[in-house]
Image (tube, rainbow, N blue to C red; front, side, top):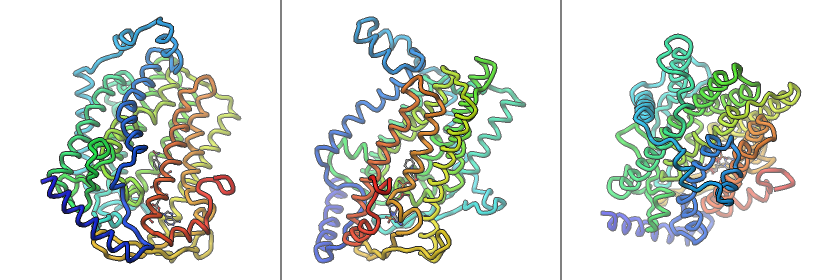
Length: 475
Ligand code: NDP
C-alpha cells in the first residue's frame, strides 16, 4: 500500500517536474521531498534532546530553584548522580492521568460537539465554518472555528470552580506539574505515531502526503498535510489550539494561585506575565480563522514536530516565566513594570497590525486601504500538483514594506517583555525569547525558501523591493 502510494506520488512529482521544466518561473511548494544531511542531523538531535531539554528545565525549577547551572555542576563535581536527580522526580500518578484524560476529553468535546455561537453575538469575530487556504493538491478544507468559545467556556468553569464550587484547588496544575508532563509526553508520542501510521495506510488526502522514505524525517516533519478523523476533527487545528494554547492561560493562572498560596500575594511580575500572555492567547483565538492562513496550517505537515510540540513543548516551555515566578516571587519597581508593559503592548500592536494588514490584503484581494492608501503589491503565480495555475499577490506597503516578516519582530518584542518581567537573577525565564528568536529566524528562512520555490522569479522581484527580513537596515 505504502509502496504503491510512493510510486504514485513519485509519478506525480515527475509529472510536476516536467511541467516546471517548461515553466521555470514557478515551482511546487510544501515541505521537502529529499532530506539533506543537515536537516537529518537537526531532526535526530531534536528527537533525542527536545524531551530531555523540557525535563531539564522543569526539573531544575523543582529541584534547583530554577538554576540551570547547579544541576550540571552537581553532576560534574560528582556531588550528585543522575539517579539521585531521577529518584527525586515525581513519577506518573493515577491522579495526573485522570486530570489529563479529563482535560483532553473535555477539549475534544468542546471542539467537535459544540458549533460556534460566539460569531452570532460578538461583532467583528469570525467563527463558525471557515475555509482554509488551497493545499498543494488544490484542496480547500473547511474548519469549524470555535476556539474562542472553548477558551471562554473553559475559563468560566475555571473561575466558577475557584470562586464558587471549590471542586479542586486552582493550584492543581502546578501541584501535578511533573506527573502531568509524563501524560503530555504519552499523548504527544501517541498522536505523532498515529499520524505517521495514518499517513501511510489511511491518509485523509493521499495527494497531499509527502513520503521521503527517511523514517526519522517523516516521523518528525509528518507525512499527511491535514490529517483528519471524520469530517471535522482536524489534527492541526485541535492540537495546536486546544490542549496547548487553551491550557497556556490556565497554567499561568494556576501558577498565580500557587504564589498566592505560598506567599499570601500575587506579585506584579506574575500579573504582568498573566496579562501579556493572556492578550497573546486571546488574540490567537479571536483570530483563529486567520490562523488557517499561517504556515502551520498552510505549509507544515503533521508529525512529531507539531504533535509532540503542541502537547509538550508549548505548554511546558512557553509558561516558564510563570513557573519561575512561583519559585522567585519578583516584585518589580512600578516604573520598570510600566516599561515592560509598554514594550509588551507595542510588540503586540506590531504583531497584530502586521498580521492584520496581510489578512485584510489577502481577503480583499488588494481592494482595501493600508495606512490610508491603496496597498502596493507584486503580482505572482504558482502551480498546484495537478498543474493548475493560481495567481496571488505579495504586498509591498504598510509593515510589509518595512520588512518581509515584521510580524515576527513584533512577536519577539512581546516575547522579550515576558522575560524582562522576571528580572535578571536567572537565565531560565529568558529561554523563551532565545528560543523564539531561533524559531522565528529559522521559520523566516524556511518560509522564504518555500516561497521562492513557489513563486520563482516573482519572489525575486518581491525581495528586491523589500530587501530586509526582520529589521529594516539590519537583517
Ligand atoms: P506569516 O503570517 O508571515 O505567513 C507567511 C506567509 O505569508 C508566506 O508563506 C506567504 O504565503 C505569505 N506572504 C509572505 N509575504 C507576503 C506579503 N508580502 N504579502 C502577502 N502575503 C505574504 O507567517 P507565520 O504563519 O509563520 O506566522 C503567523 C504569526 O504567528 C506571526 O506573527 C508569528 O510571529 C506567529 N507565530 C508564533 C509562534 C509561537 O510559537 N508563538 C510560532 C509561529 C508563528 P503564501 O504562500 O500564501 O503567499
